[in-house]
Structure formats: C-alpha cells, structure tokens
Amino acid sequence: MATLAPERTEWTRSPKAHEALQKHFDDHPEAKPSHPEKYDTSRSDIYVDNTWPPIFAEMRKEGPLHYIKESPFGPYWSVVGHKAIQHVEALPELFSSSWEHGGITILERVDDEDMADEERFELPMFIAMDRPKHTGQRRTVAPAFNPGEMKRMEGEIRQRTGECLDSLPKGEVFNWVDKVSIPLTTGMLAILFDFPWEDRDLLTFWSDWSGDTELMLAGPEMEETRRGIQMEMAAYFQQLWAKKSQEEPGADLISMMIHSPAMNQMSPQEFMGNLVLLIVGGNDTTRNTMSGIVHALDKFPDQRKLFEQNPDVIPNAVQECIRYQTPLKHMRRTASEDTELFGKQIKKGDKVVLWYNSANRDETVFENADKLILDRENARRHLAFGYGIHRCVGARLAELQLRILLEEMHARRMRVHVAGDVERVRANFVEGFRVLEVELSTF
Image (cartoon, rainbow, N blue to C red; front, side):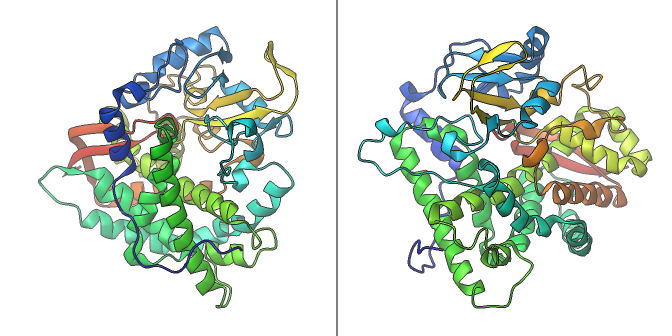
C-alpha cells in the first residue's frame, strides 16, 4: 500500500460531526438545503422529528417508484416498495453500486468537467464496487464474520456486555447511547481491528464524520475538515498496517487485508474507503439498533411484557428490532443502461435510491408494520442488511451482539424506561439516536 502520512501520535478528537454541522448552519442559515418536492425524502428534518413513516406510506400507496426532479442531491428515483427494492438489488449489473458511477449513497458525484484543476477525492470501497473486484475484496474480510468466528467471540462479547450493564447507574437518569450503545459497539470494532484500546473513541469519532451525508451539503470548508479527519484516520491505520506487516498473520481485519492479494495493493483512497465501510457499517448500525431496542420496548409495553415473560422470543426479537429500527435508511444504485422498472422509464446514469426504512414498513409484507411485534413470523424478511451480493457482510456479528444484549438484560431482569430527552440523528442515511435518557428498574 502506498504511503499516506508520516508517523504521528496526536489525533483530532473534536468537534463532533453533528456539532460542527449545526454550528455551520447556525452561522450560515442561508446554506440550509431546500427541498421543494413533496416526496423528497432526502430531507433530514423528517427523521429527526420521526415524521417519516406516513410520508413513505403515502408514497407506497401511489406506487413503488417515484421520480424526484429536484433535491439538494440532484434528481433521483425513490424506490419505496419491498418487492421493488429486492428486484433492483437482484440485478447488480443493471443497477451498479460502483463508486465510479456515484457509489452507494444519495450524494452527487461531481462531473469531471466541474473539477477544473482540483484533484478528485473519492473513497472506493468494496460495497461500492461491482463484480469481479467486489467479490475478491468481500471474500477477504468475510472470514472475520463466519460462524466459527462468531462462536469464538461470543464469550468475550457476553463478558463485555455484562460488565457494561453491571456498571450502569441505579436510581438516576442517564444517556443509554453514551453508556451502552457506543461503548459496546466501539469496543467490538476495536477488537475486530486489533485497535489500540486506549484510542478506541477515535473509531466513533471517525464513524460520525464519515457517515453523515449532510456534511457534503455544507460547502467546501466543511468538506475540507471532513477530508482532513479521514486522512488522519487513514494515517493511523497505516501505522497499524506497517506494524502488523512485520508480524505473523492474525485474525483481525487489518491482517486479513495485508495477506490478501485482492487488498494488499490498495491505493491510499481505496484503503480509506474500505476503512470507512467497515467502521460505519460496524459502528453506526449496531449502535443505533441497541438504542432502538430499548426505545421500542418502552414504546410498546405489551412487547416488553412478552420479552420479560418469554426469553425464548429473543432470537426472533432481534430480527424484529432490526426491521423496526432499520439503522441505515438507504442505499443508492446507478442505472448502467436504459431500462423499464415497474412501468417507469429509467435512463442510463439515473440515480436510484433504495429506501430500506420504507421497505421494512411495507404493509403488503409486514402486517401492522409500524408496530414492534417480537414474535412476528416473517421478521427475517426485513431488508435492513440489504439483499443480494451486497448484503451486509457483518450481519451475523450484529445479530450476535444484539442477541447477547437482550439475553444479558433479561438475565438481570433489567427494565429500561425512557425517562428524559430523546434526540434522534439528523440525517438521511443513518437512523439512530444521539440522546436517549433512561432510568432502570427490575421486573
């Protein structure tokens, strides 16, 4: 791998991404994005206010596909039906994931003629690649998430989860996100990367700066800050890479990349891209579902009662909680040629946005879709991990972490009450909570 930066020991840790973005828009209110179209669901206010479900329900009634002519992210097709999203995902050659055509988020790719003399800064990653390159890189990291590895890691995950729950304050209100969701998922990432434990907070910091698509709307100054933080992330990991390249092969993700012909010759930007994928995928998704679980159980007391009375429901409850939360709202594809999709004419180069949150509330698939039902018979049909060749490579690990969390909560007869502020993430990509103030009791 090419050199990225000289060795360093000091790393940026502030400001947090959402704080920087809020300050930017406070200082520059004229820069706030405009969303003139009724069905432009790229707007973040509907997610921070949790008013998105009826909007998507109305869209699904009118059809599985809608064209949005104008948005801050350019024109795009919204795919909102469960069946339609599976159809698109099943045709990866027709609907490309490649970074060269725009990648996997709703963000616009700047045209070459608009770049002028600027150097193009893009982060290729295997989820944003088409076959055959996608196949080789995915196969490199997949062994870290196979059933044998899950069995090997289960004891350690259970121990860490139990210690975390046992450390929670009794008789006072605290933020579940800060005390449970972030520590458990950040710790898991540190183990996967064999990352220095004392610096593990950097993984959360980098994840937030890399996963927030709204930052791209804030202008060149914010993008420069974001790019600088990602360069620091890459420099840190390059130091790990150099150290591990002198050691015997290990079971961690960096070692797997080093000893893989498909990944050990990556460019610096490709290395950064795959780090972003693994960090955001491994951090944001599980973190936000861990928060979503306790929020949903409090919102649906009949389901909390079912959980408390019947722990056998836990494996299925994990799938239902993932469906209900849907921690990543969308993925994007780009049409590689003219085609017809559910009666609509799609042009080559059109942006096609798959709204997983809408698919997981599709009434034609999930009865009472807006309700948490822990023993839902078809909960596993959710699309929160995607579908087809790009289905989340770490799905088993996410499921394992969530199952153990519920099992350890039940073993302690822990009941979590929402008892204060609830602040959702303001974003059109990640679905989660920044603040979830709770108080504990027992059942």
